Length: 145
Image (cartoon, rainbow, N blue to C red; front, side, top):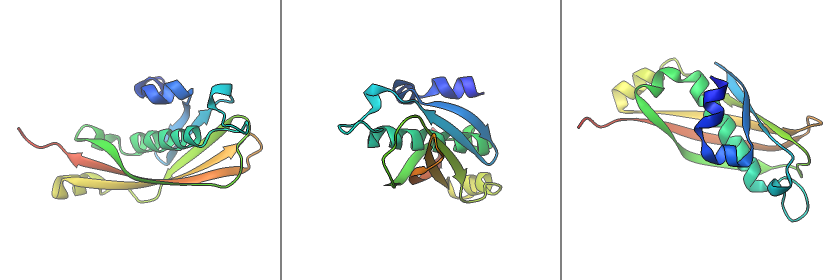
């Protein structure tokens, strides 16, 4: 499953992001320490950190909401990130669902939509938190043709 996930999103591959763990409670993703990902002061670029957080949130969504994937495609509805300190070296992100998923399939069938909130913590190699993020993903039922 991790191999499929790591090949699924071309932009994440472009950044060198890899998903290292997925389970029913969330997912962990890694961002390498590469020169092309740095900003003008030599630390990890804010855009690369956002990409890492979004990738981890998507993997967490897939791991915890697999039953919804056969019914609808997820898309990000909203995102927010707070950068806490400069990120040096490789960074990993841990994403966790904020709301329970057991009734998500029922909500999708009843309302045609199921929204999921995911919190993400980004940490450097010393485990210092460099950023936090929150994503709202939405599953929308496909319209019958």
